[in-house]
Image 1 (cartoon, helix red, strand yellow):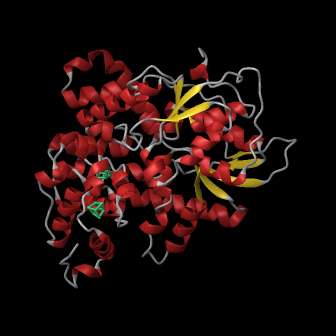
Image 2 (tube, rainbow, N blue to C red; image 1 turned 90 degrees about the vertical axis):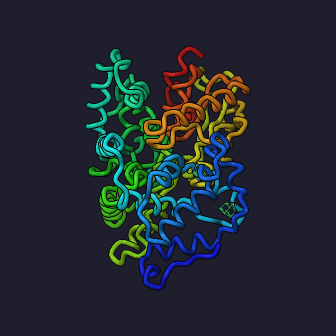
Image 3 (tube, helix red, strand yellow; image 1 turned 45 degrees about the horizontal axis):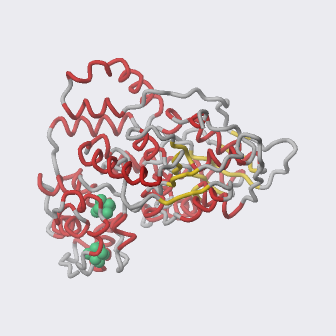
Amino acid sequence: MQTRFSKEQLKNKNNKSSEKILRKCVHCGFCNATCPTYQLLGDELDGPRGRIYLIKDMLENNKPANDRIVKHIDRCLSCYSCMTTCPSGVNYMHLIDHGRSHIEKTYKRPFFDRFTRNFLSKVLPNSTYFKIVSKLTLLVKPFQFFFPKKIREMVRIMPIKFPKKTMPQMKIYKTDKKKKKVARIALLTGCVQKVISPQINESTIRLLNRHGIEVIVPKGIECCGSLNHHLGKTDLAYNTFKKNISIWHDEYLKNGLDAIISNTSGCGTTLKDYGFIFRMDSDLKKKAKKISELTKDISEYLDDNVKLNFIENGENKKNYKIAYHSACSMQHGQKIHKIPMDLIKKTGNQVFDIPDGHLCCGSAGTYNLLQGDIAKKLLKNKILNINKINPEFIITGNIGCITQISNGTKIPILHTVEIIDWYTGGPKPKILRNL
Ligand code: SF4
Ligand code: SF4
């Protein structure tokens, strides 16, 4: 694609990177075929090619965003299905991040929109605020019908259960006494995940400890920063990125880290991008690159580094039929698809890909809160496809998808790490108690 940035504009590092990305696009439109919003809405501007043109127009002409641009960019899920399909290697992820940041700087959203986005950007990344707001939401739930549609939708999908933690909160989780320590990793326990599904982190810690891996959870790290990054709130996101990089890098230098583990694929995608984000920051670029290199999804780490000790414990003898939901951030963001399925197959159960599995379930960070109508349609399609398999339970590797899918079906859904933990000596996941 031809671009018309001036020399002056190209002195800006973000313009320079976006120009490189734009020049790779050959307008072929293959990406539209696998874009969930283009498939649903059928408008060129709701597909990747159209959005690329909108972003190009804003950046090249130094134009502030307007209602039309914002509408179509906001409808993008950041699912990156288009990146998997694109034959020219267009890095749509970096381009839309730049586009969103430009929108945030140049466009004044209507009051309600501004309020909601500011509210989410403060509440979701902070587990204490999130817990308080979720509990308050429980109180107003019976009166949700009196609220405007958007708020009603948000109240509807807020969590209603807060499982109790069964492990104490510690900085270091040491390996089992009988086990020789073979590695030391830092675990990102996440912001929302540790409130609504603490069992995922507990399974991860138990499983790693049982296999000789010490787990540390450094104080001060909560959110990966992706929620604000995708809302275009660059300053808030960068503050979080910088804090995380500094804490993990200090730990790496002082005590050694073999990996930084993410068990939420949305967060893992962002951590792996820290190196790119700070590529031109002379103080941070080396540290950020190191953090990205150390980051592994839990499935990737288990596959590469751990000889899993599968055992029958009496309860796990049954041969289950499992649907594997490949989160977009896992399959398109991190290009990990086969590894978790192969790990689950090692438990001896039958694992099936969901038809049209490349399409998003509608979760996408804050998307189901901000674009409820589209998210609901995507969820409905996902559930129809899951039902074609008729599974006894569903497995995925991302808390956002777990929450979204469980809003559309009674079929139990759990994290990949929970079944691996169970089949290597951990407890049966509570959600499967009736199976
Ligand atoms: S990220 Fe997803 S929703 Fe956005 S343009 Fe690409 S395929 Fe479409
Ligand atoms: S598939 Fe790639 S090259 Fe083709 S229009 Fe989409 S982004 Fe551009």
